[in-house]
Image (cartoon, rainbow, N blue to C red):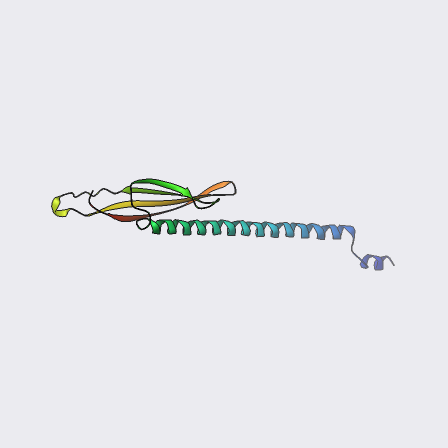
Length: 133
């Protein structure tokens, strides 16, 4: 009769071990899912910031004139932007090789806060402005 009692159910130790294994497994799964969600959100913010930087960069020289200096502003409550435009020097200034455009180095930086960290995306290009220096 004692042998049949032992095989009728689980002991308290077996149930506790099973619960501990299940709790550890669920904690690990929760950690994996929360990390994946955090990385997805960070990648989404980075992609959106890059799109904003490309849009702002495309407007420079078309809607925004090429002028030396820095301009900044906000896109929304999350993203802010800064444009740095500086003319590049051209070495050969002889009259025979006089150029009638001015090359500018244009850099667009998008900043945002992601959790406790400040993030940024920067794009840079060269643009040509009309007229001699």
